[in-house]
Structure formats: C-alpha cells, structure tokens
Amino acid sequence: MSHMPVFAGGFMYSPTTVYRCYSFFFPPLQTVNLLGVSYGTISGWSSSALPALQSPLDSPLQRHGAITQEEASWIAGTLCLGGVLGTLVGGVLVERLGRKWTAWTAGLPLVACWTLIIVADHPGHLMGARFLGGLGGGIVYVANPLYVSEIAAPKHRGALSSMLVLSCCVGMEVAYTTAAFLPYRTIPWVSIVIPLVFLIGFVFVPESPLHLASIQKHEEAERSLRYFRGVPAVKGTTVPEEFERELRQLERMCTDPQSTKQSLDRQLTWSDFNSPHAKRAFLISLTLMVLNQFCGCFYMMNYAESVFAESSSTLSLSANRSVIVVGLIQLCGCYSCTLLVDRMGRKILLVISALGTALGHSVFAAYCYGQYAGYDLTMLSWLPLVCFSVVIFIGSLGLGTIPFVVLAEIMPLKIKGFATTFCMVINWTVAFVALKYFSLVAIAFGMYGLLLFFAFCSTAGAIFVMFVMPETKGKDFQEIQKLMDR
Image (cartoon, rainbow, N blue to C red):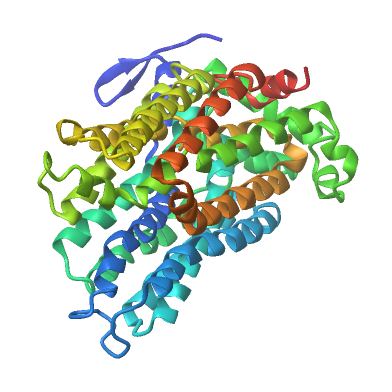
C-alpha cells in the first residue's frame, strides 16, 4: 500500500500519522468521558456537602435541620448501593441496546440526581439523589470501558480507556473547587450542565464498530470505523495499512460463527466460563477489582480532611483548600497514567503502583503506631501529608485506573457483557464495605492496623500481577485472546 502524503492544517503528513492522531484526538471520541466528569462531581459533592449539612447553625435543609452522623453515612454509602444496581442494569442494557445507547442512558439518572439535590429539603431526598448518582455511575463503569476499548485504535486503547478514571478525577476536582467558591444551593445548578451537554452531544456519535460487527451489521461497522479513524469512503483516497488491518478483522468477525449475533444471543452456558481464557480472565479481573478497593486509596480519599488536620503544623490550609490539593494530587496521578499506560504497559505500572502504595501505607502505619505508643513525633508532623500524597498519586497511577482498562481488554467477547457486570458489582460491593465498615476496623485495631492491612493487600497484589497477569499493551483483541488461551 503506497503512503501518499496528505495535507492537514497547512502541513504535510503521511496517512498513517493523520490516522493515529485522528484516532486519539477526535473530539466526539472524548464526548463519552463527560459521563465520567459528571459522575465525579456527584462523587466529590459529599466531601463538602456533608459537613455543611451537619452544621447545626446553617444547615441547607432548613425544614429538617442538621443531619445526624448516621444519616450522613447513609448519604455517602447509597452512592455505592446505586452503583451495584446500575452495574446490573448496565450489564443487561449493554448487550440489548448496544454500547452507545447504554452509555447515553447513564446520563439520565445523573441529571435526575442533580435535579433532586436542587429541590431536596430532607435527608431522604439526598439519599435518593446519591442513589441515582450511583445508578448512573454503575452504568458508566460498564458501558464506558467497553465502548472506548472498542472504538480506540490498539496503539491508544490503554490511554483512552484510562481516561474514564481521569475524567472522574476531573469531576471530583470540579466538585471540590465549586464547593470552595460557590454556595451550597448554586453547586447543583452548575453541575447539572455537564450531563445535559453529554446527552445532547452523544446522540451524534456512532455505535462501536466491534459491537456492530458482532451483530452482523458489516456496512454500519465499516462506516463507524471510518468515522473514528478519519478515513473517508472516497475512491482514490489512500488508506493506511492499520485501517485496512482493522477492517479485515471486522469482516472476519461478521463471518466468524463464534462472533455472530446468533452465537452471542445464545444463552450462556457453563462451558462459556470454563475455557482457559475465561477462567484466567475472571481470576485476573476479580483480583484487580478487589485490589482496587483494598489498596486503600478510595478509603483514604474519604478521610483526606483528617489527614491534613494531622499535618496542620506545617501546612496551614482550610478544609476546602485541603481537599482541592488532594484532588489535584489524584488528578496528576491519573493523568500520568494516561501518558504512560501505552508506553510502559499495564503490568509494570500496576506493579509500581502496588509497591508504592504498600510503602506509603507502611511508613504511615509506623507514624500512627509511634503516636499510639506516645512518642514525640513533632519533628515528623509533615510525614502524614507526604505519605498520603504518595499513596494517592501512585495509587492513581495504576491501581485506581488500570484494573478497568484490563477488564475491558481481556474478557472473551461472548461473555464480556456479563463478566464486566459481575466484576463491577464486586467492585461496588467492596467499595460499600470499605466506606461503611473499615472505620470500625480502625477503631478496633488502630489506624496503623488498617494501614498495614492496606500495605499487605498492595504487596500481595504486586506479586499476583507479576506472575499471573499478561501484558496487553499494543495488542488487538485477537492477539489478547491467543495470549489468554495459553
């Protein structure tokens, strides 16, 4: 295939260069990540809202008054319960409606969530709003990884897939920043704009070519692939070899009996889960989902304010400003992941992340034990902040992001919808347990005991990744299937 140069923006590029840039920077491809931003805003909303709602002097719920600690914990926890239901709903819809329209559906409960917060005058309304936000988030975490992994070029699939967590971090930072500068009642009016923009803009983006090929819609699959790769269907146009290779794979899918709609619609049987590929994929995915929560990053993000309070002698920041700093640290970690995941690979980043969080937790645990034992640690009052920053940054670099990338890559197509749903239900359930009950562990065994538990889990996760998980960087789905069948 000849590679005649083409002109773009007044400069001359090879078709392959244009193809690669287009497949990564094409704006509609990024539209789906507005879902992550929207979910991130409702996830981060509670950080500043709960202290305000618990204030006996100026609680926003004027008719009800200040909420109790128990009510506050349920407002926080119902997000995860909604996520469990959203994951189940998303798992059903993603095969029936397709990846695109399932993702679009996720925007509806997110709009309803902010609408309910706007009119809320009782804690029950806020619990319902957070449940709706979790419902939308659960659908997002099923549909977004599948959609993005299926529309992204193999060269950029890791970076684009990791942008879901990055966009959630952006949303959380938006929530933290708006809380610092806007009144409580103004925040939902600003936040509702994000899912509304998504619902309008995403209508014009096509379904994933891989899903269209799996239901034997070859012509639509080719049009979708051309759309996302920026390759016009014009005679005489030079077509990059990478595009031709992807197109041939779609054509094979349309004729492969294992990938046709009849095969995919057949009721799942035990044999579908008993293949070496499926068993290995489940083992890896479930381990990464549990590790995503038991590494401690999610739990610590919910206790950021207390950590900064311990460091108040060296960092004089208000609670609102402290949380903004925390969000920036997390955002930097997630952004670094998007830059490195397709260069260094999934495996090495996960190992670095797991060992780094284990080190951070271990040092932090030693500090907490020193305080418990009555040692004078005034000279080390900066240490909690440093350890916290290391855990959040390095955790976001791998453990907080890459499990969702790997989940979407390694599952067999036949069971991908069900498997993604099941693994995300486990993730949401473990998240709820962590938020609701890990504080009891800290009370029973001390904060240092909980931190050592996180360090142990992270170390065990690093060993698991090194010896069990294959590297999927730069591989297409057929190459990954061969790798997993070994």
